[in-house]
Image (cartoon, rainbow, N blue to C red):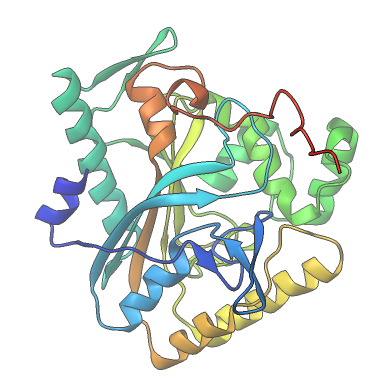
Length: 316
């Protein structure tokens, strides 16, 4: 993977793990405290915002392979500490990035297996390019049997309350993602690009140039799980500030996963970020597929587990 990006002119970089603000993803962070600076810091949720600052600084192609941390639950395809590849490409868009990722993964599979066929959990996944492409809105509407536009969040709330009472506490805008994971995601076994995500769940992606309410974002799915999101990156500082303020409003209303605005990143955008495409590829999940393993625990040497016993306290 490194060689693939380096051969195409991408520079590998490192960005901070300890960060003064949360950002780049909607998730609960791990908190820590810097004694000398007398300030609370966070383990990063994403590599994104610092890599995009490098675009502002004049770097045109950068990538990083690094660890992210999210204070969330553990299941077969989630671990609080995980490895991501993120890449940013100036003067490209999400269509260009789709072609690049298709070339990366099909070439990787061909190199490892001698063909485009990958055995995975009793199935054979076909990585022959080009990968299938579908629309987020149309797929959700079809698979969930919705007789209305899924972007109508009021009607989506009524549908969820009637059919999925377990989602009663989920904010309305997150229902799009939750219902997609229920109705569509499990069926996406062969590699599939899901294009044009709703604006409500894509705060860092550029608005779609032709489709109101949507963004220039795709997610790649395989084996019934998400492998990689990619965007035409939002580089309008005014639009980005509005979206950050909307996240801050949601946080005040009780959404603990919504981040506070990152003023340093907004300032960088004001200096000027070129149009660009960005990618995040989950390497642990990719390893699951390539090694035919059912769980992240099977590809991590030391997956996070609850200690068997509480630490023994010293007696006074």
